[in-house]
Image (tube, rainbow, N blue to C red; front, side, top):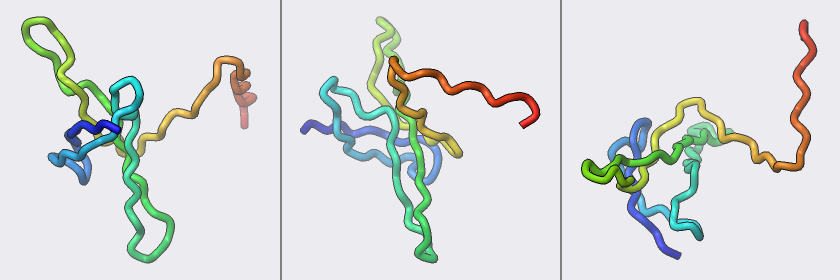
Amino acid sequence: MRSQPTPFEGGPMDGRTLPILLGPTGHPSRWYEIPVPAPDGGAPTVLLYERVPAGYSKRLGLQRGWKYVYAPGGQKPKLRWPWTKPTPPAPPGE
């Protein structure tokens, strides 16, 4: 498997670069989760980072790679299949 050094921005990983495995398309995964164990032995806290473009070249406007940006309180979107029915909205007053 190929990997690519990918920088992290924001949160506790700010300024660090880790080798991230690339998928079959040559891109790193859309979300990166880092579980942090709780000091009291409880459920671990999960730090969530989202993949965004690292920047663009001046001349041609080509993308220069990827970076991960900290998403405090962010949640990964649920996997939705095209053939599933949308969730009905809650009735008013509930």
